[in-house]
Image (cartoon, rainbow, N blue to C red; front, top):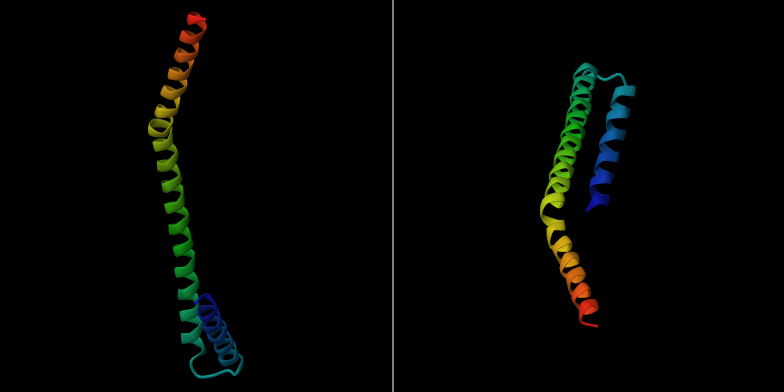
Length: 89
């Protein structure tokens, strides 16, 4: 699937480039649309970056609060058990 998308993009790029080099009637329109595509790509990358940052912040915040409480309580319980075993011996 990725290969098909890549080949389509490569085909469109070649077609666009050859049309621009042939000095066709619609060069101005093609240039405008290519500019729109690049602008949209920049916005998409910016949005994905912002989403990743938000997800990372949320993951870190939830990991601090929820993930380590059971671990710390288990460690405390193990230490208490070890202390009781030492006292019994």
